Image 1 (tube, protein in one colour):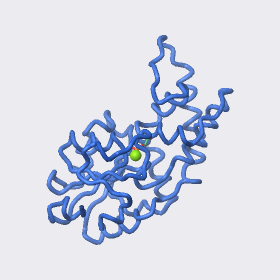
Image 2 (spheres, rainbow, N blue to C red):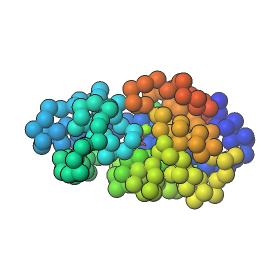
Image 3 (tube, rainbow, N blue to C red):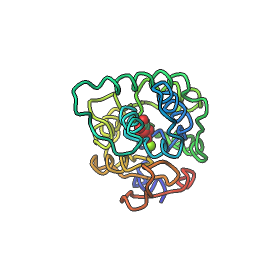
Length: 229
Ligand SMILES: O=C(O)COP(=O)(O)O
Ligand SMILES: [Mg+2]
């Protein structure tokens, strides 16, 4: 499957990219920040294998999972959620300092982004990562110049798997459902694209909450974004 096939050969189009697990392997930085947060609270580290499975529903859920030590977490019984609020603030502080230090752009990403821009495509990042962390990460990894718009998990009232961030980015960039594609690594991306009525390319190398991505019904599943060229 090529991108021109997904666009029905109607170039230029709009391509919406997930960030963590799709463009950038950010798990090492996220793990360092989670483990520093846990250490501040006197708890043992989570480690990268578990953090990779917990990324994708935004930082507040990542912190909930880290406090529970599990992907499944229960909402607190009392209204006083002081521990969570402290943990989230510590995580934001730590991640703000670490963001981009160990993260790596996946193989195939840069050639794909360059080729799309050459064709006149407009590109967006649509991530559940809080907005404040997007620009510093893209800048540090020299990816920022590719993107016309960046939507974070707290930019709009809803985040993925809700379709509204995708629809918002598509409309801002002048795209339509026939000329827009979503590229992501997780169930949150595939479900959001399906709900938005936009075709979706899924990558196998990302996080997807520790589960295989092939069975989710994406329009194409690839091992590298270079396969799309
Ligand atoms: O959960 C996050 O913080 C970010 O995840 P995403 O970039 O894969 O949407
Ligand atoms: Mg992702």
